[in-house]
Amino acid sequence: MQTALATIFVFFIVVVFHEFGHFIVAKMSGIKVHEFAIGMGPKLFKIKKGETDYSLRLLPIGGYVKMEGEDEYSDDVRSFSKKSIGARMAVIAAGAIMNFILAIIVFSVYSYKVGVPTTTIDTVTEKFPAYEAGIRNGDTITRIDNFSVDSWEDIKKAINASNGKEIQITVLRNEIKHNFFIKPIIEKDMNRIVIGITPKMRRSLLLSIKNGFQNMIMILGLMFQFIGMLFKGNVSSGDISGPVGIVYLVGEAAKSGFLYVLYIAGFISINLGFFNLLPIPALDGSRLVFLLFELVRGKPINPEREGFIHFVGFVFLILLMLVVAYKDIIKFNIF
Image (cartoon, rainbow, N blue to C red; front, side):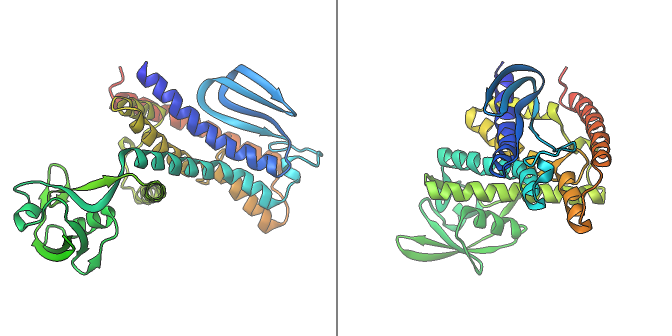
């Protein structure tokens, strides 16, 4: 039950933000919106406000915003197809942008709750290089080798970049600078380079927002790296997960508490936004590509031809989801 509730929450918040992005920009652009739907399949609930139906559907696997003239020809001056290319591109891209904004929000909340790591040391583990060199609790790291330190991320990057070679760490203790030469150790079982220190955490709204933005950028960068590895053939089918894998991941996070579920929601939101912008038929990215073609050609692609391409892409995505779901069931030993 815990896994089910956490999964529904994650899917709901991620889908709502994505579809709301399309919806609000469409409304702002003067496009007629027939329906704002969360979920797919049969309707569970519907309320009409103005010209738009707001519905909740049975299957929590997505959602959609039905706009006049989006997938068919329409003479209505308020149809999607009658708007400028810039307006249509804004509507299409807004879903993914809202996913990135959601990620920043949840990462910021997470950072504020757990605190943001500072450059001041909270604990120094005995028998580790930092302790043996003379670094103590309360020291504030200001430099590592010839590089100034402004964040805990800077410290981690510098230590990892050492590859186990000796580094010089400058700390501030009682307003006096001290230099220590430390040789990090490589923990092969954890696949990391450490010196045995943990940071002091502090709550700060501005730092939390900054950390939320940095986390979003970092994970987005990992998405680009993954695509690069995919083209190089360095990714196996076991490295890819679908809805079943997401449910498993959310379930594991739920065991640790709501904050971890929130963090996973941010991670999934970035994945959804990034994936939707890929130029794959039936996804937002392919619609943007068609709009770019229209901009270059000076006239739109035949709607029926574009619709057929999106349909083929949709069928392909469904088949791919089924294959990935099957592999996830085996990988995570669901049954």
